[in-house]
Length: 280
View 1: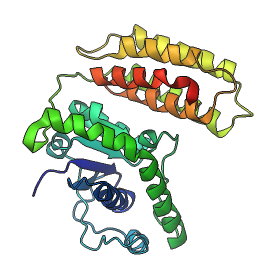
View 2: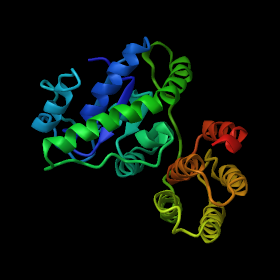
View 3: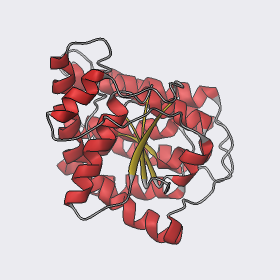
View 4: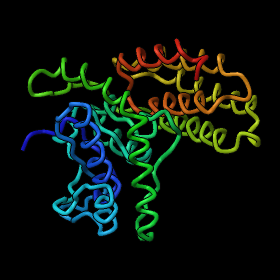
């Protein structure tokens, strides 16, 4: 079997992950990209079929999950994929912690779509919830597709005919850094959810403090965190109160990347965002 170009990472790989992979495969094909898209989970439900609700929801969208069988995310799968898309922040964190060599290629679907949104797990919910989340997955993929397509050519060019990603020598991160990054993301998401309640001036002070903690920690060789935190501070300085939803989504995505080793292209991505920050 050919290695997947894109791998969707979920929890059990029986619901949201295979649904997302199926929809993404279809949307990419509509844009002329026929590289394979697969899915895997971080909880170890190998060989289980997709849930009946997931199959039914996909049938409503003209897609078939009847032959799907769950599998665990392995180092081999993570190394072979050009891009790994997690269905939520939890799956992204687990994948990055287990396979730090792939951390620079792991994104959440919400982050790629520019939205602070994780699709909830509809396990044990009625079919109506599954249908609603399937439609939302499709909407997020539509929003994320330009970003996904922009990531593929450079990855393919560097990987050659087998589309193999570069290896990495990153070392595990200090737990304090991961915790600080998570606090920033949670605070920014709270500000987006409760814009009239969260005091942005106070929130920005807490974010600055956590960025300072991250910057003070030793960075592994090759990690771009020192420069990246400086650029995030610049983004904060360009974010007046009340911050727009677009700026908050971009801040959450950027801060979330600090929970994993940062390759050089992370700086380029954030620099490009800063160039259009005023319009967010």
